[in-house]
Length: 468
Image 1 (cartoon, rainbow, N blue to C red):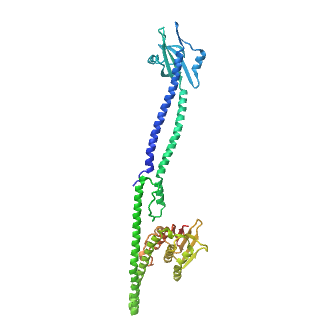
Image 2 (cartoon, helix red, strand yellow):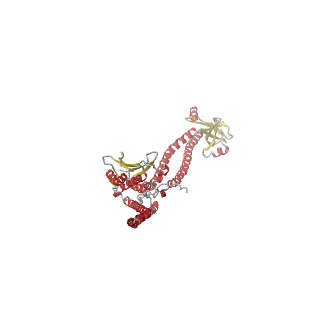
Image 3 (cartoon, one colour):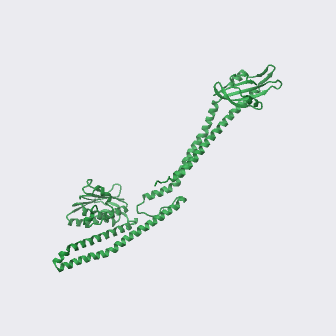
């Protein structure tokens, strides 16, 4: 199944769309407002100039005259960045004064210009211009003229650009800050959920304690409470399972021990009745005794596994200990047994204390299981080495010089009841739980266990990394 979009995306996407659409409308509205304001300012200037020139028109018998001196005409026609031009036209559009290339407004525009100057657009010397026309009639003569003033647009464009930059640049900065604040706000709101996810990822696989509701958003509280309920159910189910395994193993130990005693007693009684009868039943009795012994060991391993899960689940029973004497004492029985079998067990440890997080009983149990595995399946020489790590903690190595295992089977070494291929044909007394118990103990102590085999090492090597 494909996962859905993240909650952050679902929150940010609508907000960003709103921001984008609102920002676009704001930019468009700002542009329209700035353009209208600039045009209005310049248009008023054109209308004022047209009105001022109209006030200089004089009526005479020869016709209308525009009384504009040379200096005033020069000043009127020149402006920094823009070019202005003026003309006085009659009703037919003929030029009576000014620049003859000034465009002629439409008749309707000239007609409306009697009341007030009228604005229009045209072209002057090949460039677009904005113009104002103001028409007036002679008070006594039947004459009328139109005063036309036109202006090119560079100053309008420059002022519009400056105005837009002065408005849009701060607006753009504010928009970017608002986006960052929105993203920060969404991230801050979702951070408690990320903290819970990190807490779950960093937890021990058997840590089923309730998740914290601190700073969790109110909308997510029902979800976290439901997860806490599931964790409580899993914890209770695991506890029931451990109790069942421990109780079942404890209940089986007594009858199995009784069977073993009865088999030994039957073997003794047959031996007293005669050599022939004892020899005939000896193989059957030996097989019965070996089976009951293996069953007794299997039950003991199951009890150890159940008890280790319970005991090492309490951090108060773990402490920083000197593990050298602890391992020496735990390994001594196996060392003596290996010597009786013609094997050697080397214990390599420094004279100084080696401190690591450990349990005084269960770390020894883990190493004993590794040594027992090496004694059963390894070569004639077994090494137990202890070293302190520079960063704190300790390293414990159990290595043998036996045949090892195929490299492809290394990941299965710690599986419960796995004893290699054709384990059913071997009669070595193993249960398939020793390595599982060792890994369970080491991981509950906060460490890890790794395995290497030939050709990297002489046989099979287990390395325990223990925390400080």
